[in-house]
Image (tube, rainbow, N blue to C red; front, side, top):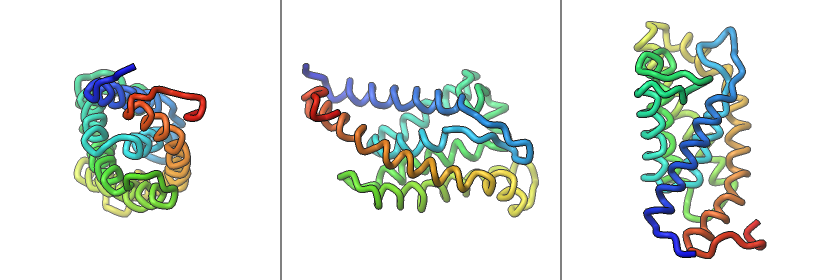
Length: 190
């Protein structure tokens, strides 16, 4: 089976955007925080680890545009400009910047230490930085309060999601590499 590079790129972007949307629906509300726990961070990290910087960026831009258009793709099925520009809107910018940085810095070959370093050491701080700055600008909260309500409760679980994404990436990278070489899936791949 011969798959064109363009078709493969569009397929990867579409699948990863769909995965992010599904992950956004899996939420646990937190009464003391402005956001809910979701699997978005897992999906964002996996997008960065599996796709090129351009593909990862496009995936997040498509997700943001769908949300802006009012499609219920965001946390818990929310959407629209009001949500996008609300107190948690900074996460969307953080997702975009983080996926590009993680994808650029992950290296060409699978490496669990490098994947963990880029997701936990770069991705999470970038996402939270944009989230806090945005929250301060939109709500007028002091920086410390923005951190305590919008970031701190999520840090431990987000670190776990980075580990899970880094572990999930290994078999998925193998499968994606097979398709990029137009070999398809074989028993050895799985």
